[in-house]
Each structure stands twice: as C-alpha cells, then as structure tokens.
Image 1 (cartoon, one colour):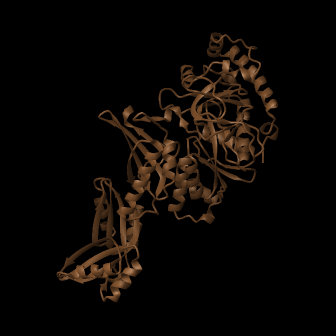
Image 2 (cartoon, chains in turn red, brown):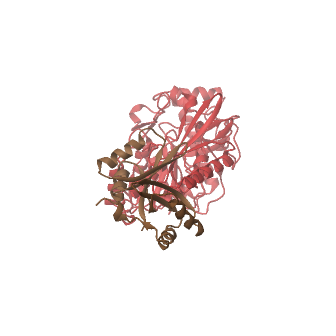
Image 3 (cartoon, rainbow over the protein chains, first blue to last red):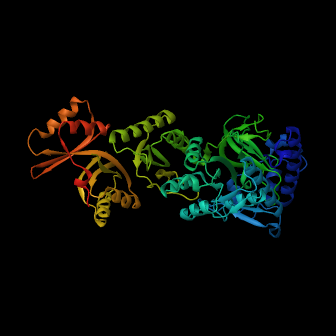
Length: 432
Length: 141
C-alpha cells in the first residue's frame, strides 16, 4: 500500500517542479521574516527571486546546530509565536536545547509523512500500535502518534519505560505494532523471554524503530527476539521529527519524503556536494514547513543517496542506513571507528546478547578500547574453553574489521545499563 | 544417574561470590560441593547443591545467570590409586573430561566429572562397578 501515490510515485520532473516552487517560496519567507537568514543570504549575494530552481540549492548557505543554539529559543521562527501551536526541544546534553516550532499546517505535514511511513511498513487501520517512544519535548512519541491516528490505527500512547506495563499492555491490548528505539525493542524482546510469556500471547507483527543508529545485524536480532519484521524510520527534530524518511518492504534504504525535505550529501570537510552513491554528510532543506524551515541543515549523519527506481514503485530518493553521526565517530589510535561497525561484529555472535558498551581510555598517551559484551542469559556454556573461544572470535573479528585490537570483556547478562530511550553505547574517558 | 550441577557466570567484582552464598543461605540451600574456575575478567562457579531448582530460581531472581549442567558424582574409596583407576577407565574409552573437582572426608571421596557425552560416562563407570551418587543421595529432602 502507498499512502500518497501521486507524490511517492511521481515522475522526477514533476517532483523537481514542486521542489523548486516550494524552495523559492521558503527563501522569500526566510528573507522577509528571519534576520539571521536575511543576513546570511545577503552575505552570499542572494536575493529572493534569484533561486527559481532546486538545481541552485548548492549556492545557498548552510545551517548548523550552533546556529539553532545561537538563535535560542525562537530566533529562527518565521511567524509570530501566536501562530505556533507546538514547540519541541532536543535533549540538549551539551549546552542549550535545540528548539523547533510548528504551525497547524506543519503538524499536518508531519502527520502526513508519518502516515506515509507507517503505510510503507504495511500498517493500516485495524492495527494497534504501541508507541514506546518518549512523549514530551522529544519528537518521537507525539510524532508517531498523529501519523498513527491518521492511518486509523488504535494508538497505545504508553511512552517509554515501565517494562512490566509495556508487556502487560502489549499482551492484554493485542498490540500488532511496536514503535520505539531499537535498543529498547531488544530489551522488551528479552523481557518477554524472561517473563516466560508465550509467543501466542504476543500479537506483534511489525516494528517501527529509529532515533538511534542501528545495523542490519541488530535488525535480525530484534526480528528474531520479537518474531516481527522491523523497519527503520528516520528523522530529526530540526527537519520535522520522525518521518523524514522510511524503509519500504524492499528494505534497500529509506525513502526520503523529498517533496518536503530536499536531501544533499556533502563532504563534511570541503562542504562540496558529492555525487549519488558517495558517503558523506546528509544535509536537508525543508521547503514546506512554515514555522521554522531550514536551509541546508547539516545533520551530521553519514550516509549515501540512491536514485534508481525502487521495486516498491516509489520514485523517491533513498538514503542508506546511517553509519552514524559525525559526532559519534571515535578516533582510536588514529583509526575512525563507528559504534555501528562494532555492533555489526557483535551481532554475528549468537552466544552474546545485543547489549554492549564501548569504553575508551588513554593511558600513557595510547588509546585503549574495551568492549563489554553481555553473555546470552540462556545460551551460555559453563566451559571456560568455550567462553574463551567466543571471546577469541569477537577479538579476531573486531581486529579484522577495524584494524585495531580491543580488549573484549564478557560480562553478566543485564549488567549493562538498559536505556529506555537512546542507548548509551560509548563511554569515552578521554573527554573527561 | 546424572546430578544437576549449578553453574554461575560471575564477573570479577568484589562481593559477588558472597552475595551468591548469602542468597543460598537465606533460602536454606545446602552446598555439597563447589569449585571456582577463573579467568582475568570473570569466573564460573560450579556447585552441587541440595535444591538445584530452587537455587536456580532464587539466584535468577537476584539477577545471576544460572546454567544447569549434567555431571556425574562418583563415590570412590579414599585411598591411593582410586582416582587413577577411574580416570584410566575413562581414558581407555577415549572419554575426554571437560572439568572435574573432588573432595574426600571420612574414608569417602567424591569426584564430580563433566564430559561432552554424559550418557557414555555414566555407562562406562557403571559397567565398571563404580558407585555413582544419585540425586536422592545429594539433594535435600
């Protein structure tokens, strides 16, 4: 099923026209209402009306997270606060939170793209969706919520946490869909096993997971634990929230709803636009939002774009699963390491659980990487030889994947702290 | 004639073994035999206890990872050469022992043995008239 075939399967020329028209309108709105953008556009020598085509996107100035913080809280709004009907804010672990605002029109767009996303995963009226993303300033919960209502599903707005209640609602209300972070999905799957709930009591069919980078190996693990098909939903509050892009049944990347959010891939060093298929930083220009559209917002997510037509029939550009954020990248002994690479290795080892933690230290000017891996609660051998064999296999695979060696430490099940939101995978003592 | 041995995976953290024995004590579980195999980072505690199912349940509730492993417990005379005789029999049958631990008291010695094929171990020892302890000899009533 396709929610909006007119757009999702539009021919490229038609899409190009929609994008160009909306881009021109957005630049005009920003120039007229936001001093920050008027200055930036003036500096770049661009007047509204100069940009009549999306092909000229690369002339426009970038926007960064720092710009959002500098204009805290409402400096980038194009409308008076009376027109803003909702405000969301990021967690803001470093410095001020990033604030985003929505008009009624913006919320309708958001519900539309989430409805497209859920439909893409085969979700429809009659489904019962348990939304275990956080409800609140974080966009996950409310973002999924209105899209789910739009497709006519029954929503259980349970938010994060309280695993016992999650399992009770899941079984008693017959939830068919689970939406949360992948790490929490894995935790719920393990809890189901631990509580001895029989598979017949669980009606789950599909999972919609996002808000943190995860690998295909993690996907298989979750699919097996919960006996579901798991889909990746991508988004960030600066662009709109969840529903910027979504995986279809082909699972060959996420389709970006580019009638609203135009993607580019740039080299994060030179800022040059890279051709399709090359790995670089994902940049979005939001062209239909009213309250807070952004020009060329640097997401810091690393991925690739593909434009070949998808087997599902959609013509929308696809992005690969994110390798990670540029700020997630660790440099260990001069080697670039993404936590997702380590996750991919660990997920191939069946005797360990999907929970891990990376600890990085610097001793005597030398970086050391320690990887804590939980042994699988049910499936572990009490023979030291076998346990050491598992450790040896992880050690070897990490070394051949990353080119650096790590100390592998097997730890007790459930000893690594579980997160109900985004998982805390990395503890970097070098930053302390 | 297999005995259920309790195996516990323990991280190398101080107080973990004390915690384990505290829980067993509070639940009135008697430990007949115990050994610890350790590496730099973790250890495996192997125990023959009076109430293995109860012990497994209460330890799991307390967050320990418990495995139940089949082992045999052989009763051998406490005199020179007894253990040698058992091992000789197993070697002749090409049985490779994964691990074992033994203790003796009052003329009786007990050896707990684990190998890949526990069925074979049992048969070989019984065919050689070795006395294997049964669950009822060890478990608390």
